[in-house]
Each structure stands twice: as structure tokens, then as C-alpha cells.
Amino acid sequence: MDATRLRAILELTTCCGKIPPDWERVDLRIAMIGVNKSLAEKNRANLLQLLDDWPNESIVDCPSHKAIEAVIGDLALQLIALGQVLELWDAITPFGWVVISGYRHGSRTTAFRLD
Image 1 (cartoon, rainbow, N blue to C red):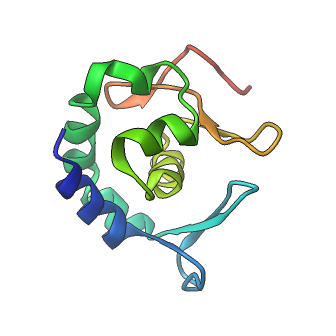
Image 2 (cartoon, rainbow, N blue to C red):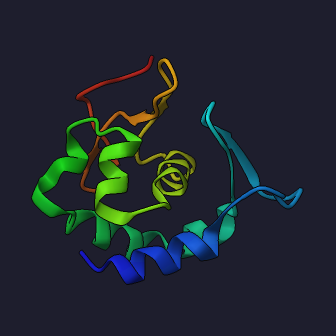
């Protein structure tokens, strides 16, 4: 996976701190992340390609923000928020942690569902 390309997408499509009013807001309990949905949609194909190249498929096993951070660094929460806005997974926030429901090649996984 090309972490430099992923960081570029995340820096373009997400933000922390002051969120522009026309951006989606994703409350991850430990941080509020802004996502520019139109820019995110324009970068969907590139993001999916990068996610499909994720090391050792750990992204499919409901990883926590710490596990994602070990792969991409300090933009893990932004990736989680971006994936939620693009409906690639659900962000789950138990007890001060953030985990995702898992990723399976372009769509939400059935490994863990919030219905």
C-alpha cells in the first residue's frame, strides 16, 4: 500500500479542528472529524485501490484506530471517518476506542453489523 498516496487523499478530504460548514461531521467520541463528501467521492476509486492493497488484510478484521495507526500513522481517525461517510464500514466507538466494522473490497463487511 502506498501510504504517501493515502495520506494525500486523507489530507485533501478530511480535517480535524475547525470543520467547514458544508462538510460532513463524524463524531468518533474521541475526535470530531470533518469529511468533504464530494471530494471523497471523487477520490473513491483511488482509496479503494489503496485499501485493497492494505498489508496482511488486517483491515478486514474489525481493526481499532490503534491498529490502523500502526500502518498509516496519525491519520487513522480520518481514514475511519472517511470510510464511514463513503459507507465502506461503520465506525464503532466502545469505551474510548474506535473500531471499524471491517472492510471487504469496496463495501461494508458482514463480519460485524450495526442494524
